[in-house]
Length: 200
Image 1 (cartoon, one colour):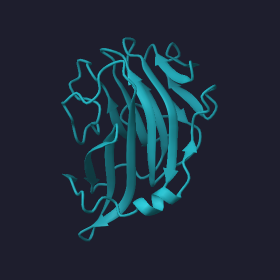
Image 2 (cartoon, rainbow, N blue to C red):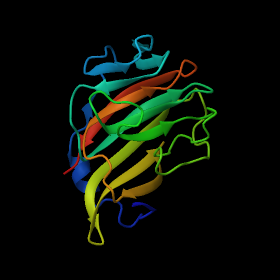
Image 3 (cartoon, rainbow, N blue to C red):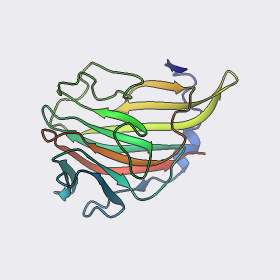
């Protein structure tokens, strides 16, 4: 069973501890060190103007570090008009599009599920970010217990606006890597300032 709730008063309870932990950068702004491409050979991941840029056919760009379990994770992202991408977490080392949780990146694609969505679990149809515009995506993930039931808390924030907290009682994905999706040849995603902060 999957369950969605907005619990502003319960909001993780680990913020003080989280603030004490160091943020670790996963992108040096110059190279793809620490990342690997998984998918079609004619997809392109490169660094231009201090940002990772994805284009071409379907693929994923996956961290070589991990696995990660409980964390805050954030990146600055930009998607083109008509583009589609995803910010994955707790995914595998060689993921397909259905492996791991996906925070959708989509402002105007024909898929109406927009940025801020937890794909397949909690969908947002309102446009929170215009295309070709940098925004900050932040995700907080922690296994926890709610009313005696084990679950995974997932909090989604876009440009400082906390959209919701999702409770996954199935604990669908236990731990894993981070990844970005190159969805299709018409999509161009740009990523910079990728950081993770461990949680207990």
